[in-house]
Amino acid sequence: MIKSLSIQNYALIEKLDMQLFKGLNIITGETGAGKSILLGSLELAMGKRADHSVLYDKNKKCIVETIYDISQYDLKDFFDKNDMDYDDEMIVRRVISPNGKSRAFINDEPVNLATLKEISAHLIQMHRQFDNLELNSPSYQLKLIDVFGENLPLVEAYSSLFKSYQIDKKQLNKLKNDSDAFKKEMQFIEYQYNELNDAAVTVEEFHELEDSFNNLNNAESIKSNLLNAYNALIEGEFSIINRIDPILSDINNVELRSEKFEKTKESFYDAIENIREAANEFLNISENTEYDEEKIADAKVKLDTLYNLMNKHKVDSIEKLIAIKEELNEKLQKHFDVDKEIEKLSLKIEKTSKKLRDLAEELTQKRKKTALSFSKQVVAVLKELALPHSQLKVDIKATETLNETGQDRVTFLFTANKGGEFKTIKEAASGGELSRLALSIESTIADKMALPTMIFDEIEAGISGEVARKMGYILKGMSAKHQLINITHSPQIAAKADYHYFVYKDIIGDKTITNIRLLDKNERIVEIAKILSGDPPTEGALKNAKELIN
Image (cartoon, rainbow, N blue to C red; front, side):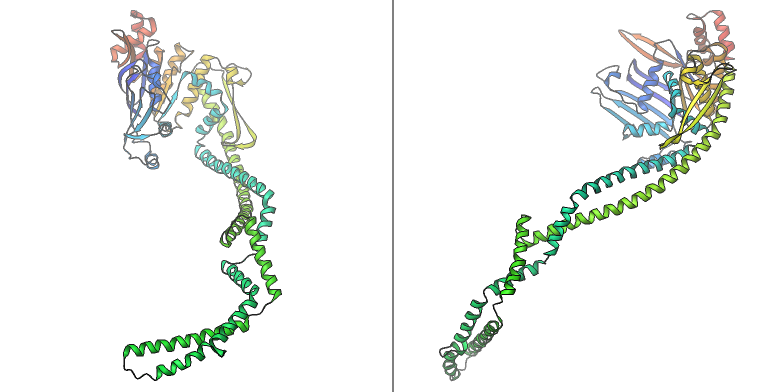
């Protein structure tokens, strides 16, 4: 429920503060005084977009602040979801800067317009004069049936599943497109991968292959040179070992007691032993090295294959070539994974489609069951509003494809005359009939809605007299469960107010500003009398105004 509305620097409003209450809040005033400006400013606080053109003084900020009592409306989850602190009193503030920039706040925490619209949708329903045109909209008509039939939880469950279904279908199409595009190049990728895989070696194997080829290719030289080295060290007449033996004898005959000498002699013995071991290893390698043309050819073929692949893929190392092979393998695996994902997602979509069909059929049955009761209640109210022969028929037809609300297309068919032909509301209802139909529908669904505040802007357009008086009673009845704010030119409706506000213009110097005040009982009588007869009101109008109020 709205507790207060504060407006600064908006349109013709310099500064305005308005307290609002439970029950029926009526707003009247001269044409052009600024009644609809109030609604415009309130729409800013509900998240409507705006620019600096709304500023009264182009050099100052426009500030609209609304205070709500939300203690009875179970909105804590909304605050938790948006990471905001909850309080039973909620303050919404909208600021428009002279440069056109806009900021919004809830309880002094900055929020975006989407958040502001979301919370406002839980708190306010605004019905302006042009909103009667919305009655012609099939989607709005469907929503009315769902509200009346209390189908919204089922609709939300269906819509949530339908959104997931649409996302999955979009993803499936993408996967299929990816798969189709990949198949065109898959054959080449698979060829490249197989070519690399057939020649596959590890880094260690590659270097061993290079070493082996080098050794085989130089076998004769290796064998000859190492044998020569062995002979020079061990076997030859002038071998190093033969020449060392006399030296060893001389060293062994040295009778010197010295720790340093003993260590040096030991090192010399080790060196001679290392020469013997090295020479024997040279001999062993020489004896085991054989020139093998077949092995050389095999190694050359393998190395040439790998070198050619490096050139082909423009890399300079076996490590980079192996990385390319792994990358190609990942692409192939991804294709196989995509096919699996397509199969999995297709199955999921099939199951979801069946569930959606079942939910849509359930909604269809509920809507058809609701439609007759809804029509009867609306027609009952229309009869109170002096349309005794009016009829409303709700036509529900299933569409071929599912959409975000199910499978139904709803059309309201109306006639205001006995025996008249049923036509769409746009074709059948005059201005006054449309206003009565709109209120009849709003009053029919009011008890089904948890909205704290309902706002009507001249709902009585096109009617007057006794019909307006009955409309006032209907609004009064609705205000028992909702805070109603109603802008009106009808004295019959204004007379039903729990709180009556008067919008007026003041001229201060060369400026015209809009203001508002809450009327007391005597002021109400005068205001309603003015609506009846003009300003100043006649005695008859004043008497009539008293009777209307009483």
